[in-house]
Length: 145
Image (cartoon, rainbow, N blue to C red):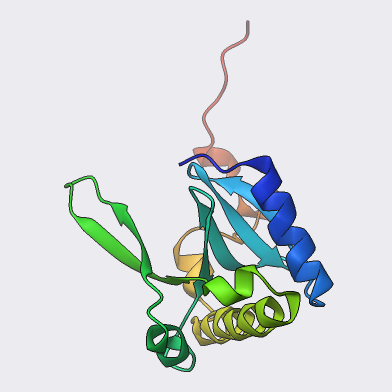
């Protein structure tokens, strides 16, 4: 599952040369690929997978790109909406830019489709100030040390 630092450097340079500035961050034994903070790619075992959706999946499938899969706790393989980057994209900056932009579009569409209140239901973005704390009569009193 480890990625070679040289491969990650190569991907960043390849995309930059094609006009797409990206960063990579370690995650779950692999790396995430981000453009302006938007997650659109996964690197696992020195293989790049790019985000797909209904708008761009057919182009990836037409040239035989395979999905990123991981083993669940139950031991079965789970595919995600990320397909292996075409070989051509890994060799030419202009080709990489085209495929990367397609995947960035898929990631943007996925982000726009999320419900606005979804983050709140998961507990994110909740108020953190004094007004979010329990009333004074319900607070636990700490014991003096």
